[in-house]
Image (cartoon, rainbow, N blue to C red; front, side, top):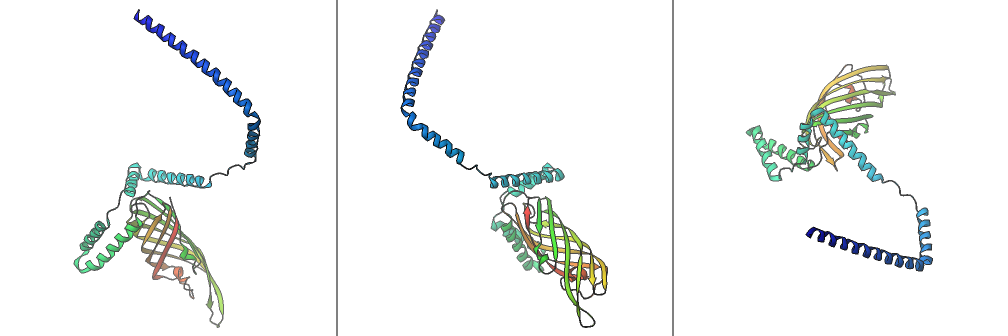
Length: 311
């Protein structure tokens, strides 16, 4: 009996609610109809005008910046995946952790630099302390926490300043601190040389060469921080001299030291100094100072300047 009473009450409430809803709906329709009739003459022109304005409005242009960001993100993910395929997921995760973690404080770095200098030996402690402190300061400036950048493509602008040398760098840093660098170059340079009869003639040197090297970086985000490392040099060239053409090749070794920065996650800027030794197969006489960089053997200094894109 109690259940039947509950059912009867529920049905009664449901019926009352339905009737109230229908009545309210009918009243709303009547009110809406009356309001619509009153405002028909005033709203129709406004709607028509709005429609015309929409038709006349120019179509929005694509978000170029958004597409560029998507392309950059896709490139970053591809680079990360490519590096992971080679070094393994564990090493790649370690790279990312090292890149993101907070850096030691300035006092801690100075203490570590001083301790490292003391290990070199008492006789050279002062000089080593200066060098170690400078390395720590440069690393601190270059190594802000951020994303890990395993690859970089760079241009060497110094080659075009009088030497006719176009040179590029391709860097790969598969694991934190350890990088591999390949630097192909093309040379086409000419200069006037003195002849034995007192006149001058134009002499050109053209050819291809390259370097393969290793760099140790003090930074944790890829090719950044203070670096040092050796490289192997090789090239094949042809000199067009007043007496005829002369082919020659060279092979050598170099050691470089410098610093490199990653700005805004992608822009790579660096520079340094080095020393190289070349062994030239055939000595070419009367070379200009720019041509001697590849056509003259022996020990010689060199400068580095590089700028490019990291991903």
